[in-house]
Length: 290
Image 1 (cartoon, helix red, strand yellow):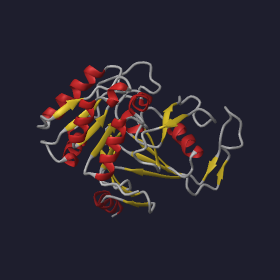
Image 2 (image 1 turned 90 degrees about the vertical axis):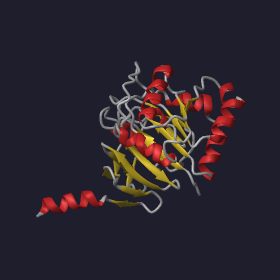
Image 3 (image 1 turned 135 degrees about the vertical axis):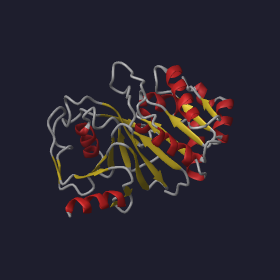
Image 4 (image 1 turned 180 degrees about the horizontal axis):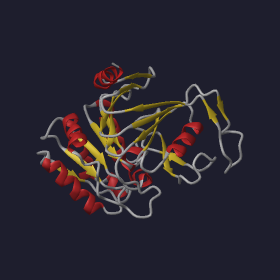
């Protein structure tokens, strides 16, 4: 799959997929991550479209983004609050996205993004621009989780890694070979991502900590950004996977599930299955060994 654009999934600080109340402190709005979004989009003069469709508090979330991007010197920032399918076909929204340099999906409920935008003309234009232009698609929490073809819709941690505990559905399809989860460390989502890759063992599971993200080029080369960790579950060489034979609600077992823990500056070549550790981390390790 040849792609000219850039994908930036971010771990976020909210996920309406299973939460009862939405917290919108937006801890991920840090200069480090948002500055990188702006830089990848072409600088402070870039046109950035914020889509708060996933959020149940779109006005508050939108204002937080306007303030955050404003602090970075960006004045060409627009809010596109899609609340129904008709909004995704509206000419003024289509015209705006055709001129944009970046679109950013906020946190909330990832299913709303798919419900109101997935398969629409707006979705098709975003995907076409991502494939053909130097166009950036960024998203946090729900906005990151919706990027994959197979999307985690929800699932609690109490039933983690029992068959059926994770709810899956079709995502926006911006990247076909990853399954993305957010708030990964703080909310203990190891079990549900493990079950997700057990169901789709040809895909890599990406667990994003908060204030942490990936910059993915050409749908392949990924660089870790932010202050936390990215956990990778690679099931492609599993030796045992009983997901297909156990009954719903039963514990599952996997063997040879390859796991990587990456931090800022580390890189992943998805197609070649190669990890490149940041020279900074290598130097720190060498220094400690002396």
